[in-house]
Amino acid sequence: MDQELRELYQQVILDHNKSPRNFRKMEDATAKADGHNPLCGDTIHVYLKVEDDIIKDVSFEGKGCAISKASASIMTSMLKGKTVKEAEELFEKFHKLVTGKLGDNPDLSGLGKLAVFAGVQEFPVRVKCASLAWHTMDTALHQKGETISTE
Amino acid sequence: MNKAETSVTTNSSVYDVEKIRSDFPILQTKVHGKPLVYLDNAATSQKPVSVIRKAEEYYSKMNSNIHRGVHALSQVSTEAYEGARIKIKKFINALGKNEIIFTRGTTESINLVAQSYGRANFNEGDEVIISEMEHHSNIVPWQMICEEKGAKLKIIPINDNGEIIFEEYEKLINEKTKFVSIVYASNSLGTVNPVKQIIDLAHQYNIPVLVDAAQAVNHLPIDVQDLHCDFLAFSGHKIYGPTGIGVLYGKVNLLDKMPPYQGGGDMISTVTFEKTTYNELPHKFEAGTPNIGGAIGLGEAIDYVQKIGIENIAAHEKELLDYATEAVTEIPSLKIIGTAKDKVSVLSFVLDDIHPHDIGTMLDFEGVAIRTGHHCTQPVMDRFGIPATSRASFAMYNTKEEIDILIKGLKKIIEVFG
Image 1 (spheres, each protein chain N blue to C red):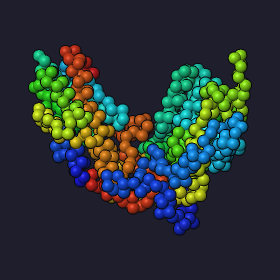
Image 2: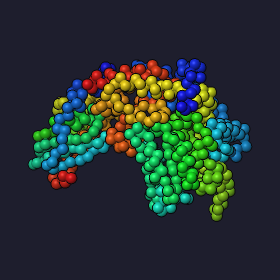
Image 3: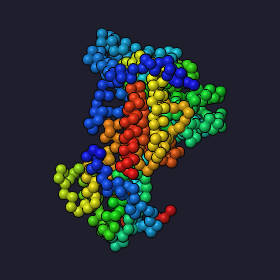
């Protein structure tokens, strides 16, 4: 496989695509949001359980490409236990990473597993795939505290 | 057996695909270090060198605004522009050149009919029939005018092969039906619709029919008098011509009665602040300076297609489609979406759980350009319960070797995604 392509489809990404973590509906979510990528018709639902400003649980459902699914899966595994502010900060740093705004030798500290998405910056059309779950999570966060109907 | 099939034996020996490929400079391009395998022809076709040179010739030797100019260049450009109209008239066998209206493309052609014919003729409670396999450009313009007029859009459903269910069409058509607009060949499924039968039935009720020929004009011989269609729309760029130029064919008696679509220069006869009288056909529908270079380029593209022969192209493409359809049976996890009996050279498919966008990105690194997504036919995707497909579409310059590269690429993807 080409080097650039290998950077995009790292083993961790392929693994999370095949067996996504926290891939379930959450009945007792305190916040949720739907994300849609009109470019490809993909949809994602993100569920959050926020208590005392801490993300107690996070899960997702939906259809998407390997990049978007792996991104959602890794996001859920990383956000659990984080404060809302920490989640927002992580999103900001992740967004800078995939859009290439961290520069040529990016400081990947604090990104943990999310560092595998560094290759996305070489594929501008795939940035939306990588960030869809995060945008959806962010939307859900900003309605935190509201009671969400379970319909 | 259709025309395309019969001509395989008679003409395949003279069909020189390598010679044709040498006429298309872009086919020499390398992508990620690999030779370009361009299989995204249903989105847009590549341009032969004659069309590229024509654009250069126009802008370097003829450029001038058409009509009413008394100077030499204006006469040259007017002749070339109107000459292109005559080429198109002959190509689709229209009765007269005043039935050929230049537009920006299929989308604008359909909008023109919806906004002009539709606004003048649709009333509350009227019905417009389209099919489930329409491109968004043959859905939204009708939705817009139906909403405005209180008319209803009725949809002919399709079966699991991606063919329209004719009996359902027969059930939908009634005295409330005011218009039928149908795609000739589906961009996402490849299905060729029985447009002649569809038109015949509509005409029994005196209902006009528009044929969206965007994906047909480059694959099938089209004779508007034989089809008896009332309107036919196509785009230049799908038939090896420039982007930004397209055609609306309309029967003269219908076009004559229709109000103008846009107001402006060239579409008028006289203008005073009290009253404007409109120009005659086709100029009534060509407000403003048109895409002169584009129209001339389209004329050149049609010359090129006719030189190769549309029947020969159809035969070659059918061979490619059959070869590809057979080749993908080697991949058990691949499912073809669109298995109609009569198809143009479009192969839409899904590959188990591997998302089309991942397929598209990975194939790109093999130099293979395909399209992935909903192909502007979201209702088709909904019908098959999928968000997207991968689509390989073949043109006159594609080869079986290129299909082999596609198949090899797909097998590699399956290995990676396991």
